[in-house]
Image (cartoon, rainbow, N blue to C red; front, side, top):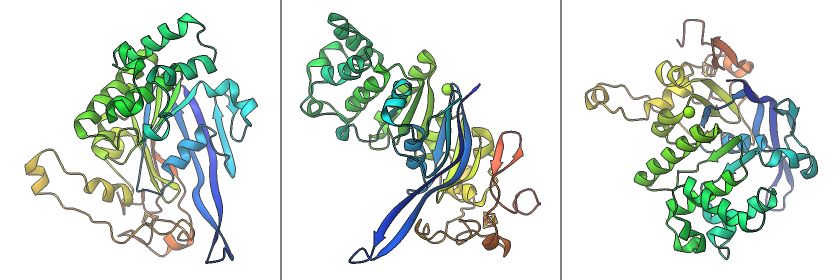
Length: 328
Ligand code: SF4
Ligand code: MG
C-alpha cells in the first residue's frame, strides 16, 4: 500500500526532577530518533517490554503529545506539534482505542450518549439522524440497539471495549492506534475483539497501529511487526520476516519466550532467557542500548549506536553484527 504516515527522527524526552527535594534534573529518553513508515490498510504491530516506547510512539503519531524532535507526516503534512486548531482537520482521521475503556467512558453517560458525542462533535449527523447513526455504529461493533440506554457499569469488559471502538469508528477514521486494546480482556473475549477489529479493517479500509505484548496475538493479526527496546527500534519487518527469520538478538530472545503450538517442537527447543532487567530510560547504555543484556555483544557495541538498516527488502535491523555473518 501507499505510505499513510511517515515518521522521521521522532524523539521524545521528558524532563523530570529526582531526589527527595527534586534537586536533580534528569531526562527520560522515551523515544530516540525513530523513523518508519505506516502503509495504508496495514496492521503494524509494536512489541517490546513495558517502557520501550510503544505507547509514546502511538501518542506522538496522534499528536497527543508534542515530540522533542522529528516529524510525523500524515498524507503529506507534518502534524507533529500542531496546536489543537491546526490539528482539527486531522483529528477525525486519527483515533485511538485504549486498554481500559473505563478510563475513557464517562460513567454518567449512557452508551448512546457516549457514541453520539463524537458524531455531533464532528458534525457527522444532526437531529434524529444521530440516533440512527448511533444504532448503525452499535451494530457495526456487534451490540444491539437497546444497549444505547445502558451505562458503562452495566456492561462487561468486552462490551465496554466495543463501545470504545464504536466511538473511534464514529469519526470515520483512517488510522486507529489500538494501545493494548485487548490486553485487559479474558482470552475468549480477546479473540472476539480481534475478529471485530479485523472485520472493521476490511469493511472500512482502516490502518492499525497495534500496540501489544502478546506475541501470539501479534503473529495472528499483523502485516508487519516492529520490535522496540528502550526507545528505539531493534527490528522491523513483515510478520514472516520477524517471526520466521528474526535477526536482532533481542527479537530472538523475545520470540523464544513464546511457546510453540506443536508440543514436539516445544520440547526440542532451546530457550534463550534474557538476563537482567531493562536499564533505566533515565540513563540508557551508550552505543547499542541492548548491549547490557545481549549475549553476543562486542566492544564496538558500547561505542557506536548501531544504524537501523534495511538488510533485506522491507526488513530493518539495528545491530552491528547482523549482516557480518555473526548474528545471522
Ligand atoms: Fe548485541 Fe551489539 Fe547487536 Fe546490540 S549491536 S544487539 S549489543 S551485537
Ligand atoms: Mg489486514
